[in-house]
Image (cartoon, rainbow, N blue to C red):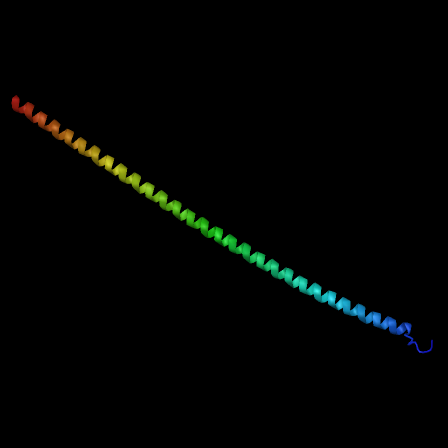
Length: 111
């Protein structure tokens, strides 16, 4: 059949080579895009991790401050209780000395 168009082996090979080159370029572009996406995801994950670490650090600092405040309040309360007990003890001692002094004075008066 003389009307059929004949394509030479060289033309076929050249066309095939062009298509393969286009596929390789597309695959390379996809690989670059995938790498960029992976890098971006890794950076985002790193930022989230750093943010969590910072939040945890802030929470621990707040908990420490709260605990310190609580301990300070307990210490202050304990000091106040001790001061009150000491004051009462001294008042009793003073009252006992005054009572003793009165008793001595009364005994001396009787003599």
